[in-house]
Image 1: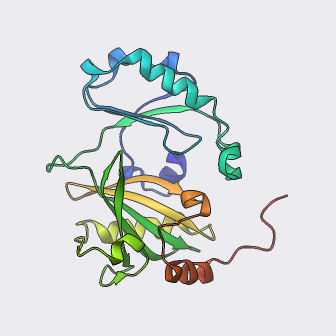
Image 2: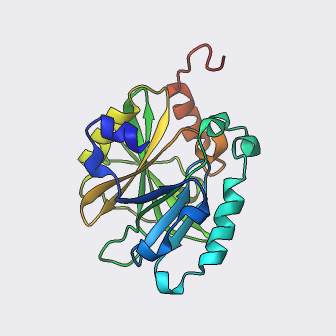
Image 3: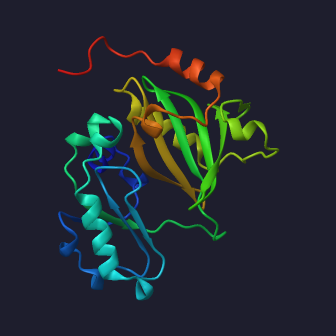
Length: 226
């Protein structure tokens, strides 16, 4: 993914990369900064957020990474594209802004290179998050999230929103659908990942309206598999 972003001239949107490893034993924790993030590349949720290296249990971290590296994620929920990814561990910069609160995740739903809407994922913690949808221009809130319908909240448009949309549409152009995930850190756009099958294709938190509208936008080729 990082190479793909670089090929499109958007390397400045990528978080700083500290290392890429084939196994947990290859990680030299002594040269890593005090705060960093470790991720396995072949699945979802395989993340370790280190806020203070002095308090990190290195052996427990290695055990978690080893377990995740052995997971055949494509077989858990039928997301076959994960089976084509070489399992690796990457270490990136720990993203944070001046507020000290969890960063808002801006997830842009793109169809054939055109952004349809953006989901703002706020207050994320171990128990979950809050989800609110806005149209492409961030002018209107969309009735796409069941929980959002019951909430009286308004998420401000991020400072670098135009840059987020522009990058999302450039990078999503070859694909019938992909969700492009970004952060806005102190006004700076940072690219997170490309998500081709959000929630394994079963978004139970989305309304019937969202399913209907986005389902009609999805135009798959007649044949996707050999």
